[in-house]
Amino acid sequence: MKNAITLQGILFDEKSSYKQGPALAPPLIRQAYQSDSANYYTENGMELRPELFKDWGDFEIESYFDIEKITSRNLLKDQPLITLGGDHSITFPILKAINAVYGPVQILHIDAHGDLYHDFEGDPYSHACPFARIMENKLATRLVQVGIRTLSTHQRAQAEKFNVEIVEMKEYHLNKIPGFESPIYLSLDMDALDPAFAPGVSHHEPGGLSTRQVLDIIQQINVPIIAADIVEYNPNRDINDMTAMVSAKFLKEIAAKILENNTLKPS
Ligand code: MN
Ligand code: MN
Image 1 (cartoon, rainbow, N blue to C red):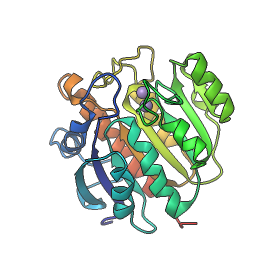
Image 2 (cartoon, rainbow, N blue to C red; image 1 turned 60 degrees about the vertical axis):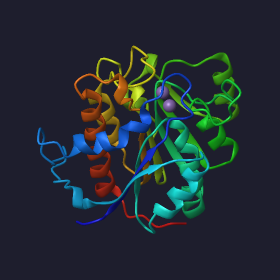
Image 3 (cartoon, helix red, strand yellow; image 1 turned 90 degrees about the vertical axis):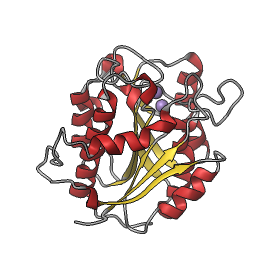
C-alpha cells in the first residue's frame, strides 16, 4: 500500500513550560523508524515501509496559530493523519483542523499529565492546557485519559467540569480503559511512560507505563483512528536514542492499527 497514511512533523516547543527540545524530535523519530537496527514489521505482521506514508516532512512554526493552517493543508480527504511533535500544545490547533473536516471526535489521551490547566503561568495555550481548550471549544465529545499521575486540585475540578474519564496510573489496568463507539483521535505524550523506558522527555514523572503497556493500549483499540500524535519526545534529554526508538515503535504500531481498523469517512 502506498501513501495510505499522511505524516507531518511539527517543529515547535515554544509552549513548553520547563525545557525546550521537542522541536528537534520529528526528524529523529523518522531516523529511528528507518534505522537498520530494526526491520519494518509490526507486531501484527504488516511490513510497514516508508512508502506507506504520504510524508509532508517537517514544518518550522513561526506562530502557534499557524499549526492549524499547516495541518488543514496537509490533511488529505479520507486519509488518516499522524503528527510527530513537538510539545503537547500542538494538539489543540491540530484538533481544530480535524474538527473542520470530521466534526467533534472522541479522544484517547495517554499522558502522565492531564494537560487541563485553564492557563499555565499566564498562557492559555501552554502545553499544560491543550485539553482544556479542546473541551471548551467542543472539539471532542469525549475525553478518556490514561496514565495520569500528577493531578492538581485545579485539574481535578477541570476534569469534573469537562466530564473527563480518567484512568489514573495508581489504579491502572488495561481492562479499565473504557471502549469507544466511534472513530477516535489518539494523543500520545511520551512522558506517560515511566522515565526508565523513555528518559528523553522534559518532565520525568516516575511510576509510569511500560513500553509494553502502551503497545497493549494501542493494540486494544477497536475503532477507526482518524488521526494521532506522538508528542513531547525531547532529544536533549535522551540516552542512546532510546526514546527515539520507542517513539518510532509507537509510530509503526499506531500506523498498523490504523490500517487494521480504518474505513474512514469524513462527516
Ligand atoms: Mn501532555
Ligand atoms: Mn505529559
